[in-house]
Image (cartoon, rainbow, N blue to C red; front, top):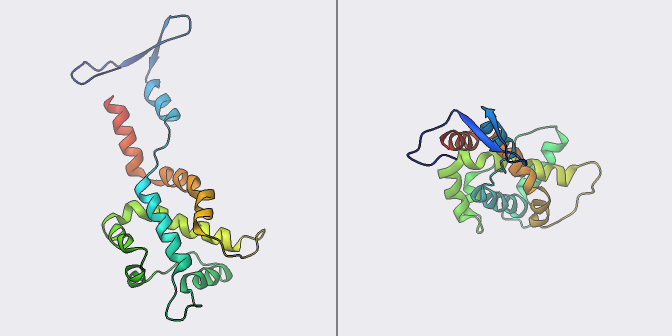
Length: 170
């Protein structure tokens, strides 16, 4: 283990069960990365919840017209992959005042989570083995948030770079 101010060793030493030191060349970092627990971005996860609520709950003047659920149905029927969201709708949605600010200031951090929300909703509402039914977004997220985190961490180079830099500096 290296501490600040100590010399960095090129080889890591491990003590086995029989108290013998085993020399490892360059495997320490790789081994550490393989067993490192994936970090969860709680900030982005929280806004994924809010965004999912927005997609499911937002309605226009007519209380029965939910434009984003209708757009999801259109996407499904026409094999489309892009959900168009009016930023003005997000800013007017009473539950998401902070979502507007978060998207404006942290878009690249939130984008993978927002995309995953759309994917989750498409699977939930339109998968062949399920019938369309109303459900709270909390249930959908509880089932899928870990998958979202895993997928996002794999696709988030800035988080991987942070982990890699932390390991290299140790």
